[in-house]
Length: 333
Image 1 (cartoon, rainbow, N blue to C red):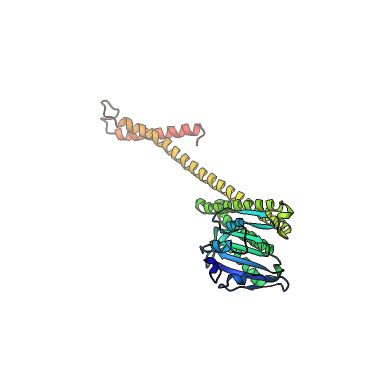
Image 2 (cartoon, rainbow, N blue to C red):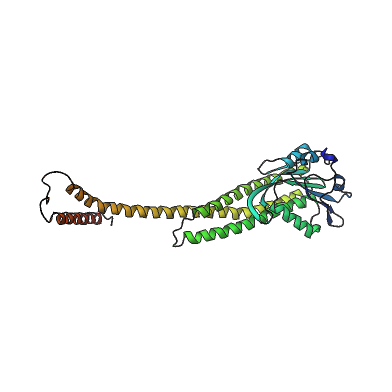
């Protein structure tokens, strides 16, 4: 029944690229399946769908005889990056960052893609940051996109640029935390550092996964690669390796800051324990004196004299002086 629907289910946007004129045309959101055809051999189509529409899997199953593995890759809800090259097709899942209506976020999102002949299909569940920037680039300069693999390269390149902007934001946050940690302020910065470290660790983990997938894809047989993928994979690998060094350095810096905060807090705790130990050492001898004179036994010294309390205070002061002399002689003070 989904194939009889006049409009494409879950359509976010669709662009028809005309290779000879180096232009593109955005199809209306109510476009039907017949409007997605590419009449000329040099043309190609970019179709972007929203997986929140439950009709999308049925539509893709009957769209241009897509391979079942491609349909599965485009409609999966798995949350890990993947990339498969098979019969001059490349498909899988890329990591991206979600965006709200009025702001970008640091929440991880997932973009499913497939490059098949003169077609590139992308699907997602939440709005994503990089894919929207690629759409803006297409609107601004469609002549730079000659084949579907160029759109794929732009998507990964925008992900790399997003990583760079996040690295700059996180670096500024670490600078502020570092100023406090190495300053005279005794504030505990672990609450501010913890979310930064969590974001950096997730960035590094997902970036390493994408980089590994890209290297593996670049080493595949030429017969399995789509046209132009070899050069694209080489360029993208270089870009991802460059930002990977920055993310790794940021992760190492955050770890060192955490260790410095722990060391500072440990020193502060040891200082408090040292002061508490000294107070205990000075108060223990007078406590013994008061305990001795507080016994309810007969024949206590100075019990029947008018100056007994004064003598007790004198013994307390002498015990404090004796404790001070012992600590001084032992090198503790």
